[in-house]
Amino acid sequence: MKILVLGAGVIGTTTAWYLSQAGHEVSVIERRAAPGLETSFANGGQVSATHAQPWAKPSVVPQILRWLGREDAPLLFRARADRAQWLWGLGFLAECWPGRFERNCRALAGLAAYSLECLRALRRETGIRYDELSRGILHFATREPDLEALTRHAEEMRALGFARELKTAAECAALEPALQYSEERVLGGVYSAADESGDAYKFTAELARRAAGSGVRFLTGETIEQLDARGGAVEAVRLASGPLRADAYVVALGSYSPLLLRKLGIRIPVYPLKGYSITLPLGPTEAMAAPSVSLTDEAFKIVITRLGNRLRAAGTAELTGYDTSVNIVRCNAILRRVGQLFPQLGATSSVDRWAGLRPATPSNVPVIGRTRFSNLFLNTGHGTLGWTLACGSAKALCALMSGQRPEVEFSFRAR
Image (cartoon, rainbow, N blue to C red; front, side, top):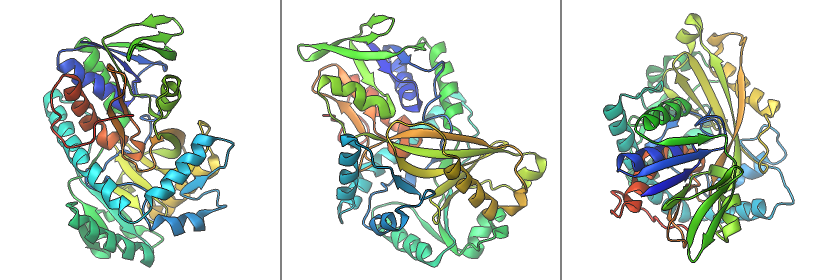
């Protein structure tokens, strides 16, 4: 088939790769000058297959109440006259009901494990490099309530088939020696040995280069105006430069997917969750003081990942519509926390601050599969798990579009 993929982030690019490898003629439409320059550009870097779980759970409700009014809160709701924002917020609270968290965890577990297998296979087949590290992910606590919650949660997740190892303070320091110098003492944590980390942007750019070498066309700098449909099928993508036609279409536009689909009468529960990151360059001295195991700080809800000669720290979620401006207060809160945890890094002379929009559903379960239009497919709504779920989502959708049964159990049906 001739297929048009809309969007060249990590989701769109992996989708194009697998479709091309399956023998389809693929073109990718991207408004930016190159692939990977939106949400995939500077995320936290964790491939957290054994920690693929939603934010929405019963224990988060009292935390949200404590965070109200705090500019540096991990989750910040900026009320707007925006119906979609309020519906998403209400949907998120509904997903916090007991039982729904477990249901959503199960929905994500198989896809996340499958995606990690696909990523590793792709790495073996292509030799692609993206500052990857296979050293697991350590969730650590510096406060007793967080440690108790981590311990309780690890036991619940093990019952659902997630591999979690409880670690004492000494074991955390042995796994990541840089933590022993933290100004706030690490009390213990939970370790997921199978997880990985790496630069999602480098991966996307390198895979796009390989895909282009295999015949995929990347049409960059193109603005998508709308999808033209008639008789239960999409006929064309209307660009500012004119229409493009294909046999099938895939919408992988992240947070912007619902804006395009709304014009066709398709409603999906995707809303942008704005996240922030900082990236620090590491010279020879800083490199020795920086962590090399990917970390999640339970107190501040930030992830910290080593990417070659850089250190990335990312986190927070802000419901503020499609605003992509960088809030210095929120970035500096992340920077201060990194300084507390790793004081031996010393003064920071250069910091790259960034903000991006995660395409989140209230349940954190992505929207992948068919729509009511026979040739229109979706691959969006991955929220904080886009990098984790990218390869599995793309390969499964490729199988579906090629008339095959996906290798993983998932509800591949969009609205």
